[in-house]
Length: 56
Image 1 (cartoon, rainbow, N blue to C red):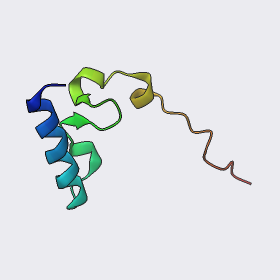
Image 2 (tube, rainbow, N blue to C red; image 1 turned 60 degrees about the vertical axis):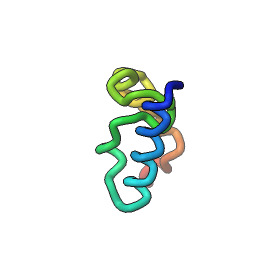
Image 3 (cartoon, rainbow, N blue to C red; image 1 turned 90 degrees about the horizontal axis):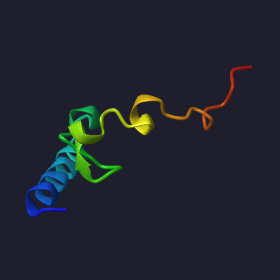
Image 4 (cartoon, helix red, strand yellow; image 1 turned 180 degrees about the horizontal axis):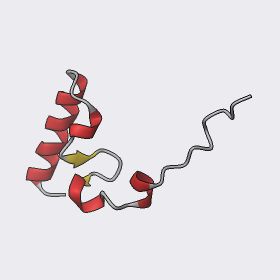
């Protein structure tokens, strides 16, 4: 990870802590990379919903 990416991740973390919506990040917290580099990752495009309870 280069210094520019590390600084951007920290900036996004700080902004999110201050109230910025997670969808507005320029970096991916999960993959520690630029958001556009992993936007098509199945983890983002088809997340598992198995942890949500089924409706009665």
